[in-house]
Image 1 (cartoon, one colour):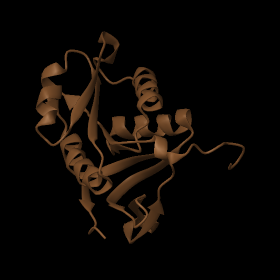
Image 2 (image 1 turned 90 degrees about the vertical axis):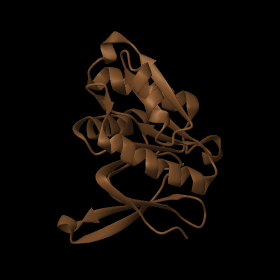
Image 3 (image 1 turned 60 degrees about the horizontal axis):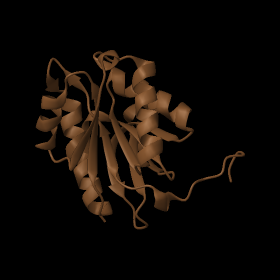
Image 4 (image 1 turned 90 degrees about the horizontal axis):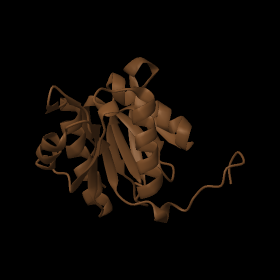
Length: 178
């Protein structure tokens, strides 16, 4: 127990998720980059990679996203999700995360990804590491996140919580595996 909150046993959490962003019928570059990073992390953890694509009429985009290395895509199709709106997207993602319990969720450090990651951090009362430039899995199987600090001149390493939410810069790189 920390700060009056009971930490849930992390063994209930499975999988690496990527919030997929589409624009003009195409996946945004940050999403395709994160799929590759998610695939690498999932392979190290021995788990699956799921893309989450809220939107309207995005089935073709979901099929296309599978080709980048996802095991599956969860599509939430509704007219209100046609364009990004904070509350509807946050409600959809919070519901899916509570129901499926992914161990890692990656968001691009785009305007929408930053907004959604921050909102979910507050709604789900979980950790959030913003602007990560590297990810790795430590010797105990936990996510290690590297982000710039002090104006980018140095970097710091952050350990994961039982459920982790991260935003990653578009030029995210993998650190060497241990």
